Image (cartoon, one colour):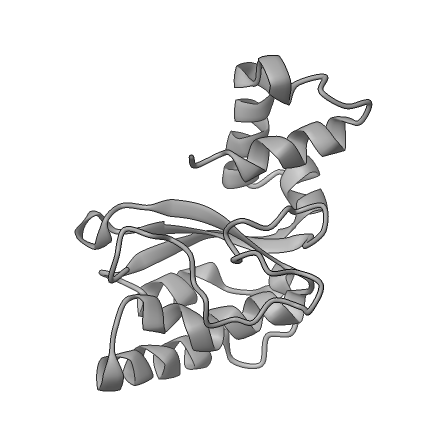
Length: 161
């Protein structure tokens, strides 16, 4: 990223939200991605949450490149991302290997999916997040509500802070 701030303002939130995409609650915006910068771009990492799968894919296709490049380079990176994503319409079908190949030197998209897949899924990244929640969450994050899902979502909101 051009700054150490992992948020992006180019994707417009719905009229009901004025929050930046890296500050949204996964309970309200249940589809997301986890992006980790390369050390040369600051090393920041964050969850980004969206209202739909289509919004996640649109962000990856058109907005992510402008965080790392300007002008012609941003256009070239956006084109490479659009080609890598192709006609994918669902996050489960996204080939992160192709996406990350286009992003070499800028960042890595480590995960895409829904709050439910993150909480219940079985990929290495999903298991890592589940383990962190189950083993390392104390105090106001665990048992704060009557719902384990709400506690998990609260944990995600603070995961990289």
